[in-house]
Image (cartoon, rainbow, N blue to C red; front, side, top):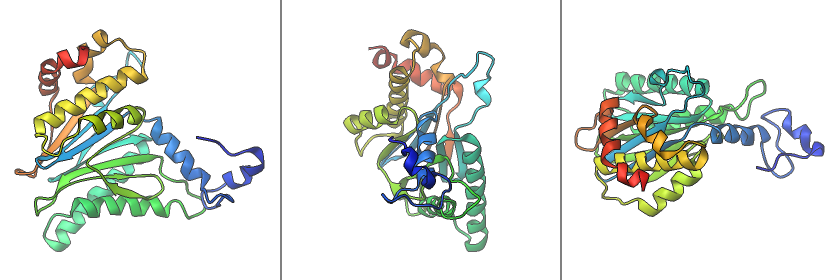
Length: 257
């Protein structure tokens, strides 16, 4: 990212001031906060949707088991994020209320599309008012609508939201997105997508860090989270540490190869 020159710094003072090039520098900075976040990834197919995210030990004394990167929004939808954790927590609490309110008023579940749009609308508002700053977080929504339509959305700090077949955000997004472009298929099973996201996060971790693969693989099941929604069941579920350990063991040759 090219930062503004000293002559352009006047456009850096507030989120509401456009530069002559049409940029909002505070929004651009919020994107940089996302790029520094731990990697999260979402993949959908005709079978369902999988969300996965990595966790990193910032200190030897940090208990990563209490860190959450993937959350349940409603029975049929989950969300992962990258960027500023506090911003992500606030937006996830908000969208849970949106989902509960929709169910109470209309007697049905909100679509994944509407929930992603609700968060994107809030983000957009925070780009055009003085005295506030943009949210420094991107979120990936994945779920299955009541009509069986599998949906995956990414919401950005500027208020945009787009539908994807597969997408990664955060520190390793370039590596993971490139990996998924080569390996994605629309007929992937839930198990295949779980293994695919685990492999992508493992390899991106090696590409963006200084850990050795033989050392990383021992604790890798503790350093990722995975949640999914099966198209038939339409229920969001997160994998346990023991389930992840078994999956990592089954793809160990691919990870160490």
